[in-house]
Amino acid sequence: MSTATLHPETAVNPRRRKARKVKELGTSIPLTAFLWLLAAVYAFPVLWFLLSAFKPGSELFQYPLSFLPENPTIGGFEKAWSRFDFMLYFSNTLAVSLTTTALTVMASAMTGYALAKYRDQRWIRVFFICILATTMLPTEVILSPTFIVIRNLGMYDTFAGLVVPSILTATGVFMFRQFFLSIPDDILEAARIDGAREIGIFFRIMLPMSRPIIMTLAIFSFQWRWNDYVWPLIVVGDERKFTLQIALRSIVGAENIDWPLLLAASVMSILPLVLIFIVFQKYVMNEDINAGLKD
Amino acid sequence: MTATAIETARPAGPRQRPGKGRRPEYRLAPFGLAGISIVLFAVFFVWPGSLGLIYSFTDYTGIGTFDFIGLANYEKLFGDPTFYQALTRSLLFAAFSVPLMYVMSLTVASLLVSNHAKGRSAAKIVFFFPWLISPIVAGVIWRWMFGESFGFVNYVATELGANPLAWQTDPDLALMVVVMAATWGGTAFNMLIFIAALKNVPRAYYEAAEIDGANAWQRFRHITLPSIAPTSFLVVLLSSLGAMKEFAMVQALNGGGPGTSNVFLIQYIYETGFKRADVGYASAVSMILLVILLSIALLQMAVNRRRGA
Image 1: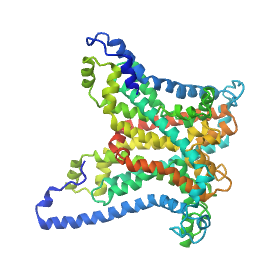
Image 2: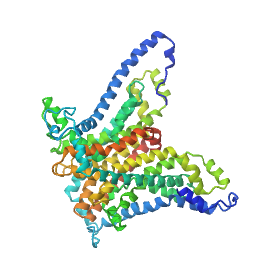
Image 3: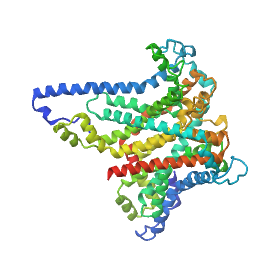
Image 4: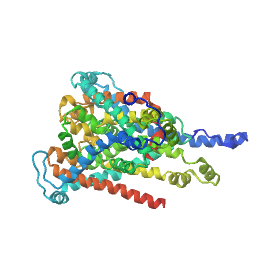
């Protein structure tokens, strides 16, 4: 929908147009003010947190508090880099997130396609309900049994344990299913008549068409995995294999919190997602795709 | 990658007549496509789910053997005040955070689709930003804001002449900080869902109502709200389920504190299952939580259907 809808009568009478303009300003000013007041409320915690990360430790707790750092420093960041082993946790998280994302996109596309285009087989409909049911039974709810399964599979404290269990997500499958439902079956029939194989149709015709969904799910999945806390918490025991979120939690859970270190490490941990957001904004904030996903 | 492998494995033979020889492939293809997901579903949902149900009737501690003890875990559970505390705290959290989240996301979304507000695309980025921030970091951010002796909020309160509030040592105030942080983090996604729904309300309705003299509130109440009812249902359902599963953010914000006063259900399950190694008992709590989640979903679906009929 276009945002600027012209009212038909505005072009008619200049005097009425002026009156209307005054009236519009009357609604526009308070609405704009309200919008930006709310935006300020939402932005403030992040701003405060970012600015604090550049304050030296002595300034963090020194009254009166100042909004801007008086002696900006990157000491916290240096400490996070050298003493906290930031790079190790960062690369662990990156490896897990990238691998899982690639596998999630592939598995979701294939499953979503099967669920959309072979609906006349009964087990497909049953499996679709099973996938939806997984949203009711998230890992958080069955932590201990899941841990025992991981242990029995020999996946405890391994890279595979961090990756494999998070591949299947109902949201991903659902996004692809909705997309492939919207593609007419005629394309499929035409390809079949031309003698294409079922698997070939998927990889050569259908998958390339779903590019926007691939992009959106890839970004979503990367964000889920990067920010995930529950899986790494139960799968990893060795400190060398920690992901960023677990490592951050270990600083914040300490008896005496090292605030300069914590703030700096937290700021650095969100940078990759901010970068992805800046580059792929149109895929992330695309309401139409997100809405289709929840229909 | 896989595509090329399949192509080379099966060189294109003579073209088959449509219909002939297609059926077995047609039957097998979905198995091949969904196969990975079927295995993952069985291994990481059905298996732990069934184990959880079985363990909830045993005294399993995570190692060695276990005995079936019937309903003893459930009996113990219903007489356990710490369980009731976790349950009521979780429900209280949901009761505060879900309505607040709903109101905030709908307000923000309405402002962002209104033609009158200026700077909407910049504002949208501001509101969306918390989506990028992990629950752990969100907990850190709000803990820093609401620190009792060093936080910004108490500093402003004292500057204005008020008494600093005990954001971390008072259980109810600590819960309020969790509610605020959860709303702040959850607005982004719900806002996007609402924006899509609001854009789909036909403009002609509003124009007709305006001609009939309906004011802004009446238009919102009688046109917007009924038109986006299915979306509202979805947002309320997802946020309630999310609220009952809250865990990571609280871990960083106050660890369920002060003391154990704000331990929610998932943290309770985690602590009994892993720290106390009482897998049987933790599984019983999991089953109760599962029933709660299902009831929330079914209840809201029933309400939604009745309103729709």
